[in-house]
Structures are given as C-alpha cells and as structure tokens.
Image (tube, rainbow, N blue to C red; front, side, top):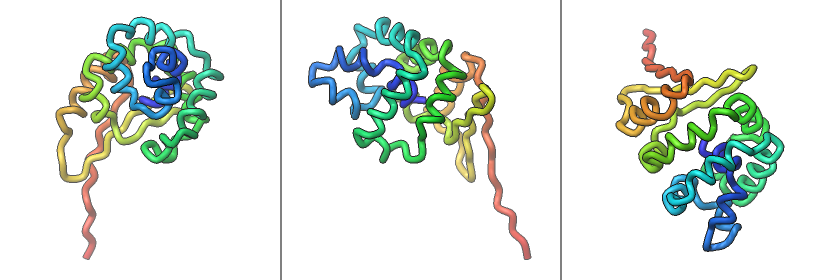
Length: 160
C-alpha cells in the first residue's frame, strides 16, 4: 500500500524534494509525508489524478532504485490491480495514513491481496497479539475506508 501511494504521487514528491528528484525514489513515504506536511493537499490531489499507467511506470522506477529489498515480491501487476481497485479511495487512505505516518507505517497487515477488484488485508498471528500500531492502522486507516481486514490466529497441530 505504501508503494502504491508513493507511486501515485511520485512526480509531486519529486517536485517538492529539496535533495533532488532521485531522493524521492528511495526515501520512505512516511518521511516524505512528514517533510512535506505543508503540501499534503497537493500530494493527495496528485494521488487522485494518477492513472494506472502512471502508477505502474512510477512503481517500476521506485522498485528499480533499490526499494525491492524492502518490499520483496511486490509486482507491477499487483500495484496495477490495487490501483484499479482502490484508485478512488487512495487520496482518502493517504490522508488517513498521513495522520500518524510513522505509527501506521508499521501497522499494515502481513498480506495484501486483490482479486476481481476486491482487496483483502490479512494479519497472521501465531502466539503474539496485535501490536498498538496494527490496532491503530486497522481501526483508523483501513476499516473507516470499508476495507476488509482479517486476523488469523495460527495454532500448531501436534500429532503423536
């Protein structure tokens, strides 16, 4: 989701970046939202105007800049499907995220899946409970947007 939002507003982030446009490729979204707090409305507007083709091009550039090590396995196809499914909601999701970007950054569910335009967020737990950042992200970002979030508790099956 963070890559999706970043790809949707990359050009605006590049315009605002005083360290140079290339820095916007690798700097985490939460940092860019905090640094550019005075420009968030224009960032949300850019997210709302982004086409799926632009989001894909921007994602490819971000991923090629070395971000792939932080988000292994994310594909351009997934980003495109997420944008098609969430595009109209993305500015609102970004605004919610910006409300406490560093807390929410750490609270996204383990899995994000999309099929036929439906998006599912799933948190997988073994022995631990939901952390504060997870509770906050689910309650303040995802659920108010009407998104589906499941929390699965896994248990070991012992056979003799």
